[in-house]
Image (tube, rainbow, N blue to C red; front, top):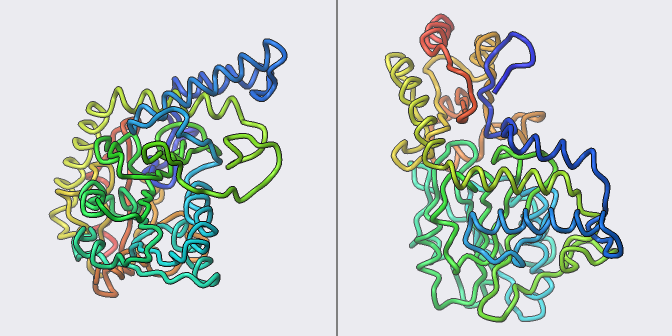
Length: 381
């Protein structure tokens, strides 16, 4: 990953990641082409349709889904809304108006859940342990006979902690509740847990897996021959099985597909690179007695969320801004900063929540002078 001008190294890849060079080349190639994937009467439209269907294959392959189970959207936020709100009419018609989720979900899940509550649904939020992970048995215990949906993220965006979605899928066997996984942070980085056929819905963002911004997908797995009974939130045109109408952005979708294929084929090498970065970071930072938030052994290796005694997050970010660009929480709330609901749910002391920063990198991140970072942090005490 290159910096446009000399300056700090970008360590906020959980907010948005750099684009893979191959994906970028695909996007640029299609931006210079023309053709609506919905036009079936000429070669331009057919060529665009072929590119879209190839991308559908590429995205489906990462999670072991069928290509016709992939619905393209603008990103995981839209996919989350479609998954949660799109099931509401079915739930009300069947008298199943209870939803189970967790206290550490992204706002893209928590806010649609608030909308469901306003429509008369009952929502149960399961807390995590102090290691940042929810417990499968706690999720199962929250499920009732009238539960319509269980929604659990694959990887937490603030701590990097993997949630036990495969175990949750197992404990839900035999229950009719649909299982939705927000995979914005883990798609293409942790493969196996998303391949369970018991997971009915998977939300994905392209820009978190080194593809272009503005495109994503919702995987809607069939149960045998039965489709997930989703209703579209928008109308007009009938594209994407009527669930997401509008002209398909061929360049973005093709770039997303290329990024997904690259992520699947390079997952081991990328993880090894990120693990090496984390090891160097910890070696430099541990003498400062940093407090790490979330169990490292169950976290993906490209994220480090920590606090330093006596230094609040704003001071730390300002103090490091000429070295590294970092954040103190989810980008979705960065313009109206409030203490992290994730860290509060984990039961961390208020001073640790207030001092927490998140550093997130990727396989494209340049080498970081972690010793200089540690020295700067030490000087802020």
